[in-house]
Length: 362
Picture 1 (cartoon, helix red, strand yellow):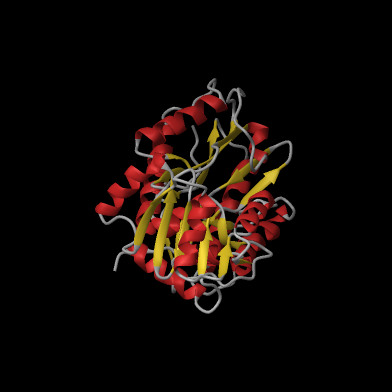
Picture 2 (spheres, rainbow, N blue to C red; picture 1 turned 45 degrees about the horizontal axis):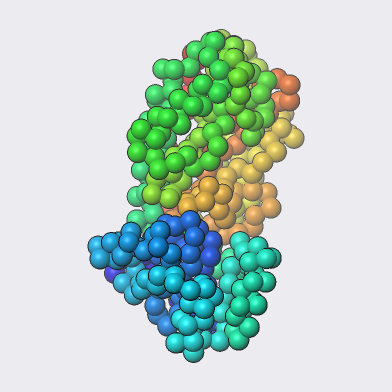
């Protein structure tokens, strides 16, 4: 059975006894359930079928993928030739559907009101995070795409080390990284590249600008997207000779990440992994200097669930992909973050990030 068909069976199992159909509207959930990417359209799951409701911009590409066997085995393409809600009503009526799931987490109030107004004969039920929960466990095809995305990201780090020098701007470095990722086959960037130096390295989500590099830390948080799937990596390097304090902070963050790795395995609570990393940082005298979670899931979205955070008491499933990214941020001085992404395994993890983590001095 194809991976996409396995996904459909998983979703159908979640629908069983709860709803007759599912109207999927958000881009990444449509991609997950159909294997087809489009900026607009609907995916309707009903009666064991997967209907792709698409306009003329996408039907030719979808039909080609269907002929190649790249779409679900039960997929059917419906070309929009009238009001979309009329097509939806026709499909639901053909299968005598009554209770229909909709994506309440991603649908706007306006979109829901319009759907409810156009389909008054159906009971619309919020799906909550049904698809997002399905997506937390990656299949073989998804893992291969994430590994490819991370491979591109690792190559980008190796490349940029030859570009970084005093006198170049943060913006120039970020642009070079993004250009290189695209040249290596990235479909796009997984998120806006973070490239911050000196005192700005204390800003976890600082924005690269025309700031010129001088002696100090340079933190780069970046990732490629390959066939829809994201990678994520952070490395902090030092331009010029680091002070003893800078070395101490860097090594503390590295130890915190190692402690998180030691704790990781399937069916552990997310907050337990966070605590392992946070305890190292707090015990080293930097309590209050690590203001974000230790890690987040990623896949089609750069931020998914579950997470390694103080508030996440979710059991982490096998084959989730999660970042491990502790950091220390000293306001007005500097910051350090080190991030890898891992696949959760029954008794540990597989680290997908191959870039070195020893403190690099340029």
